[in-house]
Length: 389
Image (cartoon, rainbow, N blue to C red; front, side):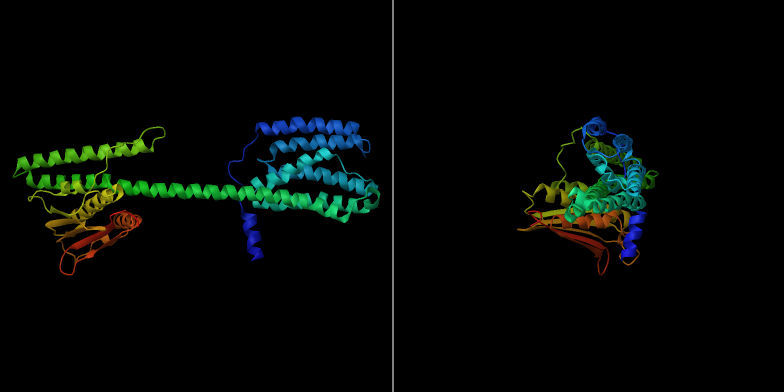
């Protein structure tokens, strides 16, 4: 388990989109440099005064690259302080540097926030060296400096605490990005469903009318002209719906506020007797004062079922659409008289039946689809009048 965690950390990539430098970085430099110089000049007890100031001035530029090159910044800063600390330990000097060195606390945060997993591991090891040297030095001179064991422990906890804050910020950003990706995925699914439920219906009607027109053109030119008129009408509707969808997707533009089609528009799905298969529509019961969501869903389910039947029902001559409004529910039944025994593409997964079932489920209803016992295919949906209970 621990081995897998280490491997996962080692393989962790860098956090995306690290900002190179912002105005706050220059503000930190504008504050840190004068503080380093002033502390080096006026601090009473200071070992290696000139060297301490020089080390501090060498540390500050590393802050500018802490996000884009977090490991290099950590190695530069903590490697330098570690080398000086080791030299002081060998010389037996109580060197602590300047209080202004505290500005390097931004480096472990940047390492855990922006660095890759292997950079975090290597950088942590690099930071541990000067920290252990500092503890060793504090222990040696504890009596002279009046430093307790608790002070040493607290000093050791500073770097891990700052690193933990950086890691928390990193994974909070990762969770936010994952959530945004999930939202984008859902939006794409909704867009695909809308395209399938609207534009695909009109395109299917165009194809069917074009095929019918080709069949009757040699014997009945007038029927061919009627088919062309229907094709023009369906193409205009598809274009209008595409423009409405694009307008709704464009930032800063108002969406088309035209009313959605509902149950009363289902009668428009009926076709003439000469069409094969022809569509019959029967509306019964109380279908008034339906919520807009239920009203639109019934129409879209009926239209999708009719489109599927016209496209896939083999040897079908008639499609019957029945909508019945009851006290608490609205029932929709779409039945064709095609050959149910043959292979039916509607049984395959896709946006058709899946999207229809999801639309019904979102409103607290149900949808069942399958072949009849004797002949044909039936789609039956039941939606509560009030939407989801």
